[in-house]
Image (cartoon, rainbow, N blue to C red):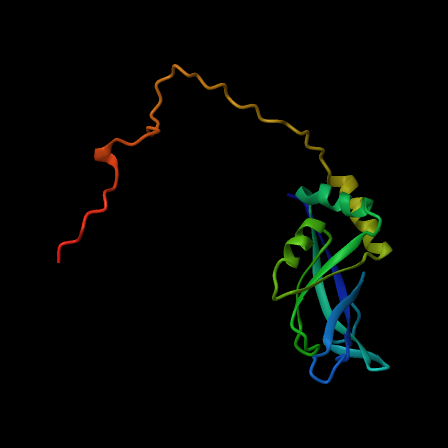
Length: 176
């Protein structure tokens, strides 16, 4: 199965807590189409208490079997990259996965331990995904399965609809 691996970088923001009892929130905001020379978990900017962090690089893998999913993503009103990360401390947060498959991103969203965010897809990545789809997409025709007609006269090994008395589980008192 053909596949292409794109190396991308993840940026996140950390907002301060709203109340003194709350915690700050670390949330992915962007994916860059290349990996900079900056070390992972680096604070890039601070403005009004909002910190911008570079969390690190991650491989975005495109599989030829998922081209219809990627096409659905590109044809949507807002093509996105889904970033799944674990942890709220920007110095230790782990990028679990980066995907362009919207259905895989939706699957990650059901995991309560992960922070999953759909961030805008950069144009350079959009072009690479479109090229991959053009090169590897194979349209799979829909085939509706037909049920086999049941033969009412056929002798089949089926469980009887009503159990006989000797086949039933009987609640008998235990001997002590």
